[in-house]
Amino acid sequence: MPPTYELRDLYNALEEDDWRRSNPFGGDLALAQEVLTDFKSRDSDRAEAIEYWLQKHQPCLFGRMAAATHTMHFCFLTDEDLRLPDDHIRQRIQDALLAWKRRSLRPAGGLPLPAHGFMLIVASSRVAGARPDASLHRFALKLRDLWGCPSTDSRHGRLSWETLFLAHPDDESYVKFTFTIDFFAAQGDGRWWQDHRVPGGVAFTANSVGHMRRYREWYKKMGDQKEWLLTTAMRTIESAAETPFGRATWLISMQGTKPFVSRVECPFKDISKLSSKLQGMDWTRYGGHLHTDHSIRSEFFRPEPEKAKEIASQQWLQDFLYLYDPSAADYERFSSGAVVDIDEVIQAIGDPEEFTQLVGPIATDESEGIPQDPQVKDLLAKCSLWRMTPSELEALESTV
Image (cartoon, rainbow, N blue to C red; front, side, top):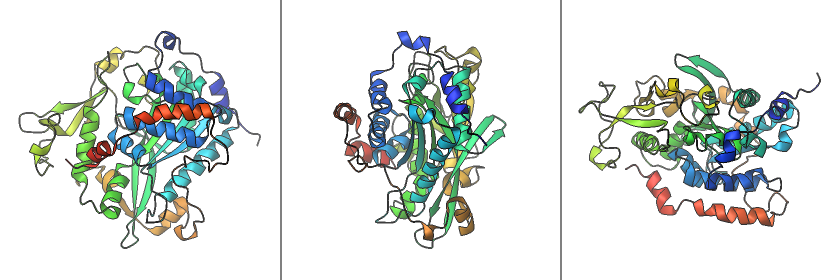
């Protein structure tokens, strides 16, 4: 069959975002974008820039930690890639996904660090500057199709899924985590969905908090991490961006001494140790004008920066229970991991005993054999000011 160029054609059909002319990108996003979209940048430069940016400007605390500890796996697509056949892009994504899953299966000493998350980033000035309309929506849908992740319809919308495996270090049993994929875009900068902005163009993320939890418990010997997961998730929602159009997500207050799901007892050993911002906040549900499990949200693809009336008039009630409550429907696949047979692992990513190469974090040195461009180096020096300090990272990793 002749090659297809559907993503290229959708890329060519993108139109300029007129609103952006009078509402330029924020300084942080514009600076990182310079590195990501510069044709002289290497993938190692792009990885360094996005890791710096995530550490300072990503409200998701799990993502900030992954960036600071090099436990996010990246796949970059540039303008050059987007001009090539769909099969090229599909294979590039699939190769990166396989590398991510293999490096994260058996993270023993002497092997590459695992990656709890995967990030597919389209680094393109044309995509970043495109109007968030039906054309960009079709582009995002096609990119997700080339990823090849399964999608399902739930009562509240369409979800896209990924999986990640982890071996127990003591008995070589395996667990599988199944979790949803999220969508980000530069177009969110300055709009009501500010929390879902990203430098470069558009991006998909697949982050497994369960893999992070079990790695901390099994490999770092940090004890039961359920309380840490919940606290970090609540802190993430609490830190949502304050925009001129209000927040996209928010914590909700307790109803007296009872949470929204009243059957659930307090999951905290000592609630008095919670930060003042979390005191009195519900540990079972949180609110939002977007659903955090949805992937490509149609409500993002409209040029107006404010929330549409139908968005502002409804509130999603979203779940914290899956992080810590074994009776919750999603607890096993998201948080604790479902025990699986080695045959399922082999079918998905190959036989671990036959792996011949593991790809860890993208090296930020001259290992690619391509000298670093001096201008890119100067830009990265500015981006490095966003690097998290050891004390900031320690605070994120704390269970308090």
